[in-house]
Amino acid sequence: MAFFSSHENRVKCGKCGTEFDLSKNSIGCPLCGFGKNTALTNEMRSSTESKNSSNENHLMQDYMKIPLQLKLPKGQPRVEEPSKFILWGMVNSYFPGKFMLRLNANLLNEMNLEYLPLSTLIEHAQREIVKRNFMNLKGFPNDPGSDASINRQVYHFIDSFYKMGLFDVRLNRSVEKGNIWNEDWKNILIRPTQEGLEFAQLKNRIFDEFKLSKEDQILTKEEIIWMKKYLEVIDNKGFKEFSLLREIDRFIQKQKNPSAKNVREWFMVNLEFIRYVREWSSKNDDEKAFNKQLANLAQTFSSGKISLLRELGVIKNKRNDYTLIGAI
Image 1 (tube, rainbow, N blue to C red):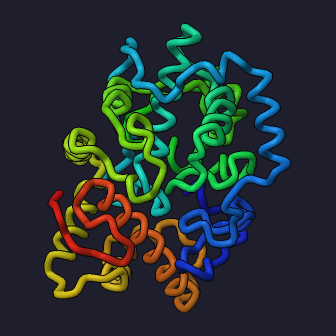
Image 2: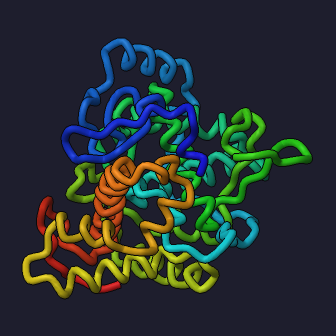
Image 3: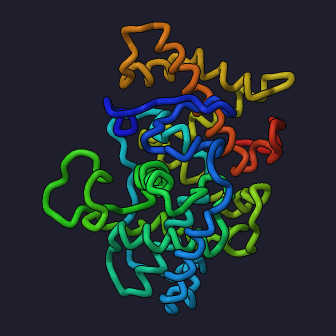
């Protein structure tokens, strides 16, 4: 997988136990935020405000409004073979992806373009995140000026929605080589698919009701219905995220006092998960090292999937509370 290479410097978060690549997340844990600054530095704020003030058109535009209709292609999940582990474990929210879909669609309408360069999308995203104070929301970069934080937005959230069939992406050249995101972002062209635009057009608590707390980071009833239905559709095409979430839901139902530890241990003994890790792990020849890596990844995936189930209204939206309040 592209997330793990011979150049990685893998560490374990001292707070939540998540294993991550320090070279790509130098300011701290990308899942829980441990070690990160919780606010931008005064220098960055000053710089950002200066850029914003020099761009009156950007300040006047509401790029988070419900986007207008666009002529777009239908989406298809990118599945090489059926799997429950296509989405990376650190993907812990649907909101950052929806944020990018709305921004992308509104910029296409404003600029009258068919596609938008990824570099342009990211440039506007950095300003919008600061402007709207999204830094402390789950899944959004704590420091939008940090390359590591912005890389996570691309490699985790945009890539995940791309794999789900919610973004249409192509290169501004004839031949694709390797991981598309490793190209110069000016040469990567991006737009929502029909399904991506549908999801972007549904009302949202953060973007339309101007909520700004993690407690409000739950999908609306309409968004939940849409996302569950879409996950079922792509599940039938081999993108088995829905199957995984449903298995976790059923496992929690059987627990007398469900906890994070229960879910983490479920991943630890899940044969499909173990096989998935072995497929790309460089630690296969060292069982002790592999088991340690497996434990760290079980923590990462369990935290991420529980977070998604909270947003889908399946699990109560309260820290350390695993009470089921819905079904998937």
